[in-house]
Image (cartoon, rainbow over all chains, first blue to last red; front, side, top):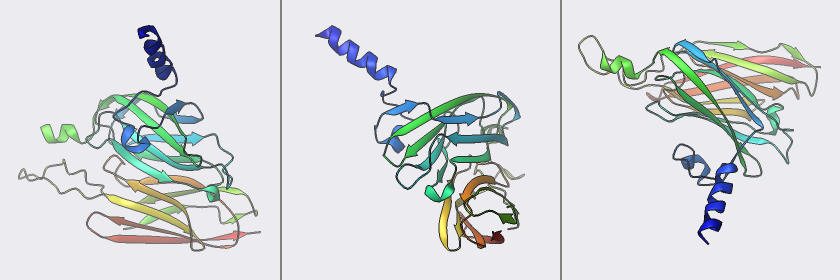
Length: 139
Length: 105
């Protein structure tokens, strides 16, 4: 019995179904799968005040099957949810770009919410030499 | 609040076009200090929307996690000639808007 519950937990980990305090406020505990989403960020940012990022999601962007929203989540910023971008079939392509602030080296997560209610994600690790926001408070 | 818009002036019907906008705004985080040690109050563009001939095609909710002078790039399908209207509001309640015409052939 214990072995079975261990296997269930293990399979949960493999499919990314574990609870994640960063993603739960958005997903409400729904499973999040890896794939379909591509988050492009530089490996190294000299300055955390403006770091370029681009998210693209594999999707036909049709009325029946489209990306409803792309959420950008930070592991270390004072506000975890950096932005939410709402798309729809009128977008034609699920690709957005912006520039973000990073309060130090961290992992950034792009979470895509599909029209069928499923969640997909990708993450990127960024090394920041000079942080944004928090350092300014300390100085 | 001034804004600079990147949009192809002409497009084929059904073509997916790239739309870019750069808005002049400090996106104050609320963590920055004045010379006298007081905190500069947080003031960021909370919400941004793009309407294509009146229909919303893109919306963004932002936080201090978006860099000053926010740059946003997204896509939309060119359906008809007309206008793209961009509007936004910050924490202080200040509203801004911009519009750009598009010709679809």
